[in-house]
Image (cartoon, rainbow, N blue to C red; front, side, top):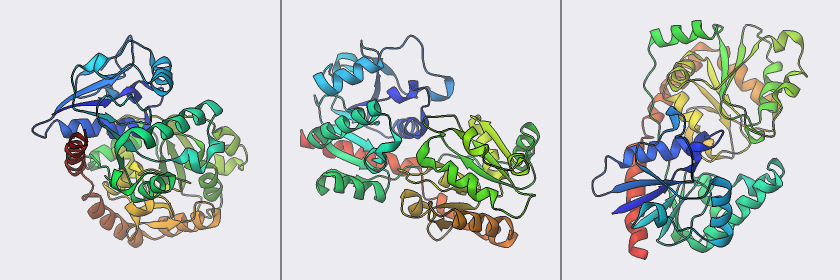
Length: 369
């Protein structure tokens, strides 16, 4: 069976979690017999950066990204096969919806634009809403990264028989003591710190995290923020509200290499990720895979990952976030127990399991043709 996967997000300025998910899935699917995979993307002069290069061949359509997305969404052409040749199933791994020339399997990580439209640009919102309209009409199956997303898709109008829960995985090597010492030295890290990782954008609730950190009484604890700048979020504005002493305990590392990120998780005293909404929550399971305690939000997908092994908070409650940070950073026995239980939980999230569920979806979609 020949499958075309849309991989245009690998060329985005900030590829983010959707690119991680697509690339790791493609890598796991190459290990499954009976599947031939080909990526499809817009026209580009150069390949994506090394860390975002697909593990499968990629065929390119004639249009550049913006023109391709507009043409797909409003003219419903060009067909994927114009680049890939004959295929059996199209897997739209991002929100852009290609024409339905063959059964379309769509991955949906979240529908944040329905819940928080004010956090998106007018152009972005128009794009997402049109994609949803087309998905409701044309997607044979919709793969949801979390039960929270599945319920949101049901509420948005997708029939139950088209929805499948397909959790994502984690591919993390346990960082060694030498790895941890290396990153401590390279980034001049303090002994005890709260870690946050992700793309800097409004729904990550960095304003709430920073305000909560400012309420910690222990001035030996620092806050380390890791990840690329995204959109519609001014970190300097949030930091400017702090006292000089508190500001001096916050480090902005920006994007870091994957090998360093694993060691940063392992070095952290706790990961705190109080997002307003997540589709899955890679940082939560990646931190747990390094035996690092986790604080995250109740009421979104990360609750599914951390329930029973992490501390769940209302992301709108700054005091609750601060109290949770104080509990973990001030209690080594609690942090150790949370780390051990989280490590066991993370072991259940594998890309091999994800690939098995996706391969079953491909077979089901092909039979719908």
